[in-house]
Length: 88
Figure (cartoon, rainbow, N blue to C red):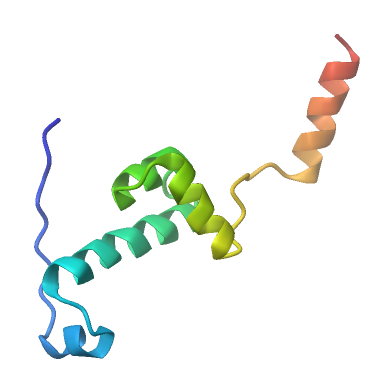
C-alpha cells in the first residue's frame, strides 16, 4: 500500500514541553489526530484506527479509556432497530 509522508513544522521547544523525541511526537500527533477526527465524525472508527497505526480493537480500548463512545448509535436508532426486529 502506498503511503504519503506529511511534514509538519514545529518549534523544537515543543518536544521539550512533551518530553518526546521527534518520532514519538509524530506518532502522538497521528494518534490524537485520529481520535479527534473520529470524535467529530470526520472518519470512521476503522479509518481512525488505521490513521493511528493501531489495530481496531486497540483503538477501541483507547477510546474507552478516554471515555469516548465507540458506538454512534442513538437511543432513537436502537428503538428503530428493535421495531424492525419485532416485525420480522
